[in-house]
Image (cartoon, rainbow, N blue to C red; front, top):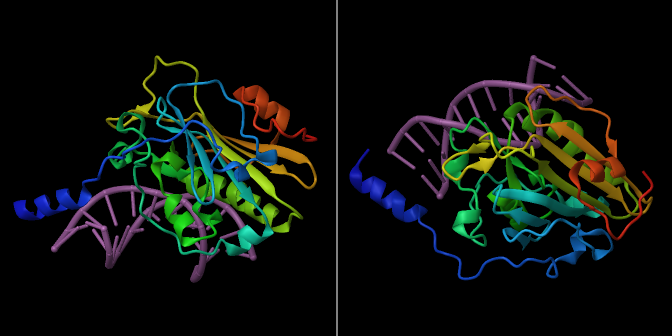
Length: 247
DNA sequence: CGGCGGGCAATG
DNA sequence: CATTGCCCGCCG
């Protein structure tokens, strides 16, 4: 490999610094939440709200992953979700460098970059590209990501939304072990590796909610969903403050 | 058993 | 960066 070539690559890969960072509320994109009300989480100075075309993220600078990712699906959005899959993962410039994951963190880590809002849900080319933000990723066991999670959780949710009468609000996120003693991070940035992943599905028309709850492990297979109240109990997050779903 | 959807890494 | 080849699991 030539020195000159490396130099050219380094120029191409350089990124400009963001001039302003993300805000702390979702006033710019309330449409992704049932009754326009985002989940209630414990305040944290490193939490930042990010709005995208087809989803919204509350991002944690401590874990360098999402706290949750919210979407609104319905029959029309799923029928539109036929874009060609993008492949370009990127660090999100709206986050301070010290708070965000990088491509280097995931490289050769042994963990996959697992989408929270799935690429397969995205209704436009731009939304598809945005879904590859590392703010929308968590370190996920590779076989789980492409296996049970993709098939029994993501595809099933899409299929459900495609048959629903109205809007289906979906919230996906990681769950970490409370202990900080063990190093659970990957890469120079120490992106934390979730112990569990969840996906909450709320059918507004039927006022019903349930949640998938998977151990982040290659051995995980599909399983029966848990109730909304059980998810709230396990995470400590009131995901649907604007709704009173029947479990 | 082929297609599909989820990824990975090496190369110039 | 784009291109290319590859692995894996699940479904029909």
